[in-house]
Structures are given as C-alpha cells and as structure tokens.
Image (cartoon, rainbow, N blue to C red; front, top):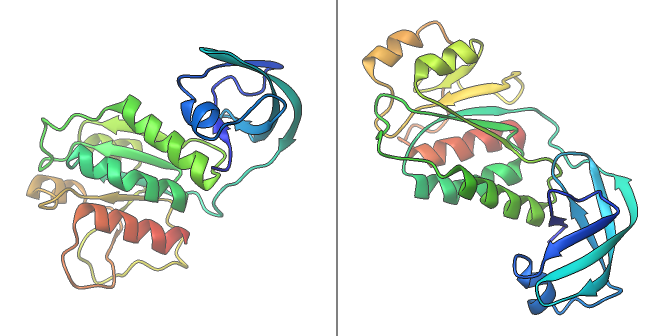
Length: 222
C-alpha cells in the first residue's frame, strides 16, 4: 500500500474510524507514534501523519508534513465503454486505473442490457483501493451516459474502436475512444458513428469488451 485514503487528508488533526481502517490498526498492528502517508485523491499532496491516539472506535492523527507529489500518466486518455455485466466491469477497473485511464464514460448502447445497473459507490471504493496500491494521486473520473448519441454529442471528436483497415497507432494523438458492448454496435449506432474516426486493433480475433478496453488502454498509455 503506497498511501491510505481519507477524504479529509490535509487537515491538522485527522480523526479516523478504526473499524473502517481495521487492516491498519488491527492487522498491521500500527501503534501510536507510528507515521503513515495519506491522500485525499483530490489534490497533488501526500500528507504525513503521526498517530497520537488509538481508541476502540476512533484514532487521532496529527499532521507533521505535506509534500506535493503527483503520480500521473504521461497522456490523458478517456474511454467510452459500453455497459456490460457490472461484475466484469468491476474486475477490469483496477487494471484501467493502474494503466492511468483519466476518465470512463459508461454508455448504455443498444446492445447493452438495460437491467445492468452500476453501483457507483462500489466503483468508487474499487478505484480508491486500486489507487492506494498503485500510488495514483487523483481519482479516475466516472460518468454514465444513456446512449451512444449522448456520448457523441458530449465527445464529438472521439475515435471509435471497431474492425477497420486503419489500425490503432501509438504515435497518433488519441485522447478519447469509444468501445462497443458485447455484440457490437447496432445498425442505427453505426449510422450515427459513420463520421467518427474509426480504428482497429492489429489482432484479427474477436475480443471481449473487457479485453478490448484493456488492450486499447495498454497500447495508448503503457
């Protein structure tokens, strides 16, 4: 773990629920006078706190130093990801977070199952846990859009990943890319996307949605 997350990290006196941070105070046997690094994932600072007191329900920490230290990817990359099974999305998110994807727009495409509902609080917890492990200093942005049309209206210059003669090239400046659901885009959506720049991957096999999004992010960011 590179740091510990708390939304109030940065205040002089930090009060934390020991039950919420059970791994730190009970499993790792952290004691008073020990020093921990904390982030709030909203600014570029990493905060050093000394543990002053550990109670049954709450621990008190005092800020002893702060240092500006950003850990950011070299490129900004936004993914439009058509909604698939939330369980698969949740398993894939840590990889995208570690790679440095800046933002994900979850899009309900025509072939997305509309009964798939995303638990945004759970997604945030997954991203926080991933960031604590990989050291990422800012939380990935997440939004939900109700259709491919809404996505294109919001991101008119976005590329689209599909079968195409033009292959994804790392040298090309692609900052936003839309990936379809399992089953691909509907004919109505393909008509809507006909004026968007379309790129493909070099492999000729049909990829699952989660494989495509990780492969794309890896090629652009890694």
